[in-house]
Image 1 (tube, one colour):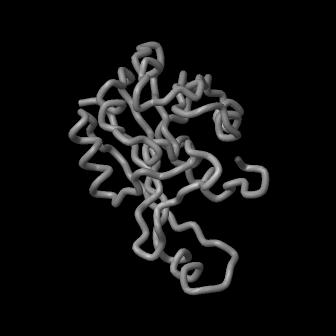
Image 2: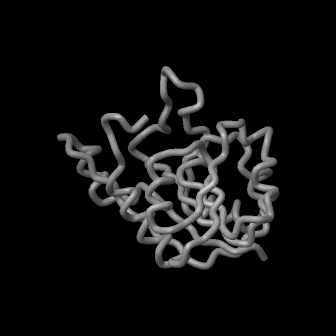
Length: 173
C-alpha cells in the first residue's frame, strides 16, 4: 500500500497529536491491519495491537477488549458503511481518530483494484463530530491539516490551503 507513497506528513502530524494526548507508553488497539504507523507508535514505547483485517462493519469484537487504554483509528472510518455501530461498541475510555475531509474539488477516493481500499464516507468536520457525539464520545481536542501534493494544476494549488485531514481526541462520556 505504501510502496511508492509513504505518508510522511500525515504520520508526522498524527504522531505529534498522539504525543500531546498520550505521551507515556500506553496499551493501544489500533483499528486496521498492522502498518508502518503501528511501528512508529511502538518506537515511542506504546504496546500496539492491530485488528486482523476483519470487516469492522460486521465484526467489531476487537473493540470489546477492555484491556486497552486507547483505541486509535487513523483513516479507517471512511472505509466503513456504518462507523456508528463500531464507535458505539468501543469499550476503551479514550479514542484518537483521524479521517480525510470531504474536498469540494475532488471526488471520494476509490481504488479500482482493491475493494477494501475505497472511501464510502469522506466527512466534513461537523459530521464526524456529530457521529462521535451520537455514539457517546466527548470531543476534547481536534486539529486539521492540509496535504499539498507536488503536481501542477488547480487542485494541487487548492490542496496547499485546504485542510485534508481531521484528527480528534475524544473520551467516553
